[in-house]
Length: 249
Image (cartoon, rainbow, N blue to C red; front, side):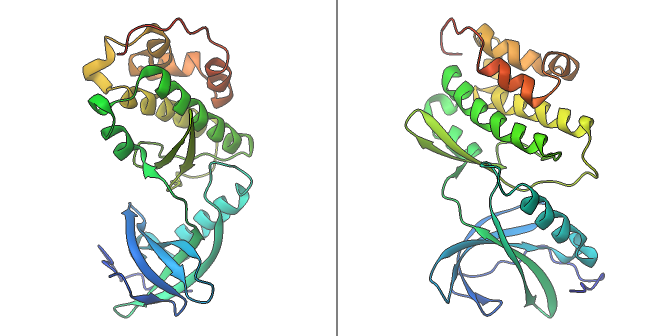
């Protein structure tokens, strides 16, 4: 599909009930990011729910962004933390052809929203460590396959609580170029930042137990990289450190 280089779309604003690509009906807006917008859709032929990511054409010149995104999702299809890619569709929006990636629809809530609903708008340290462990195990799978995420934060993490566990999916991989150790180390720093924010951020950091501070390192990147040079190392720490309890931060 050739995309018009001059076309620019700031928002699609698709209403519920609109049929796109002749196959899907819009059922709700799920979110937006740098590359485009994501909608909940229903496949007309089967009645099954799906997610559809529509790419802003100016962010997808010559389909470069959509190809990178689809190939990465396909490469990581066996990773439990990655949403499963189905296929590519095209549609027209105000005379412009738009690329649309159709994927599985995952139930859950953005981590940012989930944390904001908790008491004090933060997680108990032990609960936050459970969440970080699930997230880090998933990212370690991605790294073992020679890839990285590039933009891990609480608006790119979809979470659903199941008993004492969390089911987690990562949204919106960002492409900063070919994968290397530096980009994977950046993922680790971003994972630590997720923990830091989940327990209350700067306002509550001084009161956190030592188990949290040992991981967050005051958000000093050099200390984080020295202590946790890889996601595997962070996984190993989370699954083996001695927990002494302590007050809620």
